[in-house]
Amino acid sequence: MFKKILLAVLVAAPMCLSAQTLKFGAVNPTEIFNVMPDVATANNTLKQVQEKYAAQAKPLEEELQKKYSEYQELVKNKAPEATLEAKQKELTDLNTRYETFAQTAQQDLQKQQETLLAPIQQKLVNAIQAVGAEGGYAGILDANSLLYKGNNIEDVSAKVKAKLGIK
Image 1: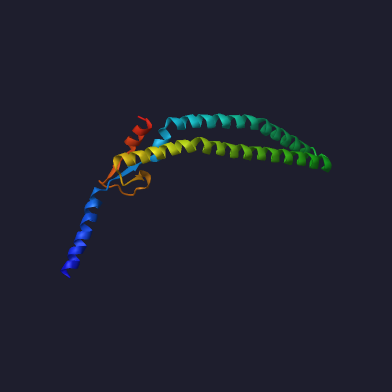
Image 2: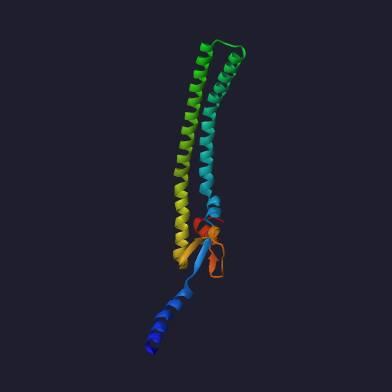
């Protein structure tokens, strides 16, 4: 019996000692991501694309409003049913064209956003991993999801920013 207890203590002792040497880091990746210069550049590019699509959509919107006003005027003046139906079909077709354009523009904008931001996100992940490896951390956690941060968790945000060249 004494040998079993001694064996258990000998097995548990190294685990207890190694558990005390583990160190963890915490970082706020969203905060760092938002101050990365590459993000500002990507956002400017996306803004330009968005403005281009808005400029292309404006004539369609104006034409749609004009056709709708014409249709309302025909209804007000009690135009013949055939004329109303033709104008309504024209209005419906134009509205479908506008919605298709808006949907295509939104999809393209989203695709470009993913394309532009993915390498920046990977750069941030690589920096966090490098800080973790260099600092000998057992893990680096997202500070946003920590409900409690004890004394054993170091905030490594400054180190990650330094790795990325951000002040």
